[in-house]
Length: 513
Image (cartoon, rainbow, N blue to C red):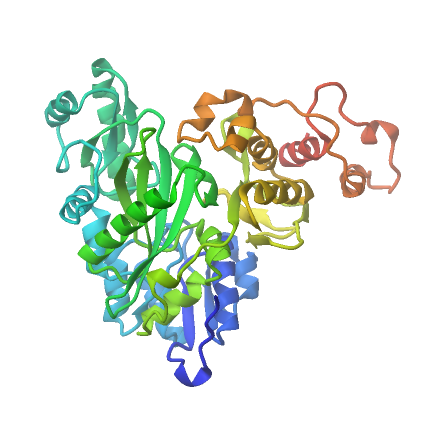
């Protein structure tokens, strides 16, 4: 399903992208197809980043820290004015869910491509969001009804809720300010740590207590709502595979949902969106218990990292519809006309060492080969020669594939991952290959505790059977001495149970050893 706007209907002509990396590249490509000019932002480490090279115009941000650059609202708005843009798209992260920024954009006479500021305020406070969910008859996890600021308050609600429980930042998300507490004596320490992390990340130390579900799935519903009261859900995404409460693999449809449960959860997401007068794209997130009960977690009032999964199964370009909704268009389709097609899965590739606790691995990408083929999509922000900075989120790219069913899409993803080569930094590629071939993953036996239940996934066991013609080429390039001759000692492969060659070369280049 694809809807192309005619030039005569276009009102937004130029958009500033208040973001960086792979999401900025992804936005640029849709804007270009729509005939919209793009303006990219580039902090000093990003002057040669892919998004800065691809945009129609690029504006250099002054400053060194994230706060001085991608979070500096006044500087971004001044750039928007200088470049004569009509609208600002915040991507995800940074200022994407900041109601003050959305309001400042509108006050400057520009269009903010996202939900309204008052909607962000209502949903950004997780306690208020749960109250709204109750008002919309959406199930919520038992816990405290408001933000808590003292240990005594937390202890009171912990006794009422029962252990194990979660402490969560009332104003945050993404795993920041979250602590699992399994017994009463661990509560004071967890309270202090969660409170401090919440204060540093969100400027508010408020926490709330939530009952901990032992093996829940993380299932979210994509919503799309226009300015005319039309609210739709675009089906679910299973996002249970996580590390430190951040997602690694997402898929749709969820292996756990029956048609009846899908309809029930989707309608709950729509009711909540209508309750808050939601406009534009967003995601309603749920935990799905083993007994089939589901509970509201939060709303992400922005575009999600995993939105390409939904685009594969619906045929819709969500960024295009964000723009069209922002300029006042009505959705031309109804819930009854939407049908998911096949199965899609996304794997996130981070510059992290999965066998060292997912430690970040910044550095120069010396060699890159990305996969291709039918029903294979790569959203990437990197190229060979690009230096991955240590200042930002280490997400490099995403591989998203489609198949007629889950088995076909997972096999297509396996091949795509094996075709992918990134040398110079450690990445999550070997972990992802192990993960999607794990018997429990293949069975669809998933939960948010999957990595804890299967610690073997983070053990470094490599075989030497991952051969590729480019492996020899890349290895030769990296080990060639200055004279051009290649000695046997320099080209000798690691022996025994050592990591495969591509992993060894990446570590060698990153460490200089």
